[in-house]
Image (cartoon, rainbow, N blue to C red; front, top):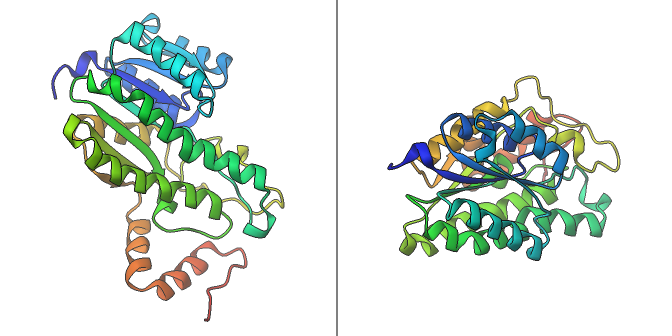
Length: 267
């Protein structure tokens, strides 16, 4: 890869968790980083903590607002000229059985996790086309390849993200833009505490969860050496394969692994 020390990156959801860790990793490697999120105070906190803080941008923006997103990208164009890396990390969960979901929250989740990702892909394409060895990383989830009970809406949104990555890899090949999907496992972030959970379903056990820095490292490595899809959990990858080849077995294994009273189907 050429010019890695001066690469220009945009990271969404950069005010906490994986996005914050990614911004720190990229800045430590010499990147100029545009940090995008809805919380201006948190963005300023993250930016102030980065090396060479004046080289980076804080962009307060709701990704679901196309006009605001276009304005933010115009600011990036004015300051950076182009983008070499776009990290699509922002997203939200929704912990609920399907019968407990609220239509408005379903739409909000799909709008942020899917529609906004497509909007950013469309609007950032001109900047990526002007970049050096351009890469887009879609931060997906292990549940994008194997849905889990209680997270049907979130899993569906990540399955859509994985399909988007597969399509974009071919659509953008003519522009020589690499599109990578990163299927993240359990990670210790505020994500789980912040997701809607109307009936207080038990969340995952984070005892063995990844540190956000591990995910940030994987994102940086994808920028250096792009791969179509990378899993951060070998066990879940095997479960996803089993879901294709032997779905009833996969259902039984998943129900047993999750506990919480879930039962595998018998018909």
